[in-house]
Image (tube, rainbow, N blue to C red; front, side, top):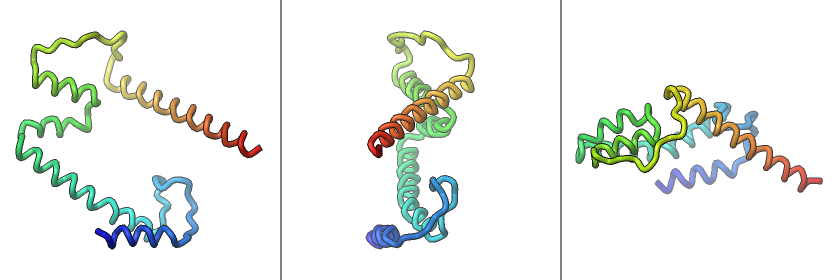
Length: 132
């Protein structure tokens, strides 16, 4: 494991010209892409091993894992609460319930985009004031 960390540290010290703003755009040089994969693979492996161990101990959790990518955290929490205590009654209800999951997801994405925009504007504004 030490060799991976040393490789990442030494590669980070080597200056390389990259023509991209974000790594998510996919314009990484080949050696950087390989280093990132090497850095991520142990965590992916450990995650799979941990999930396998959990589902072997409690097979009923496989259903939650299968639906994990398709539901929100609120829905998952509600399912766990109903499994633990079927007579549970929520303390309060929503003021407005979106007509579908797609609308709920769209509103969540818009909320995140608005927050990112306000944050980026604030950072740019204060950085611009500092440079004057």
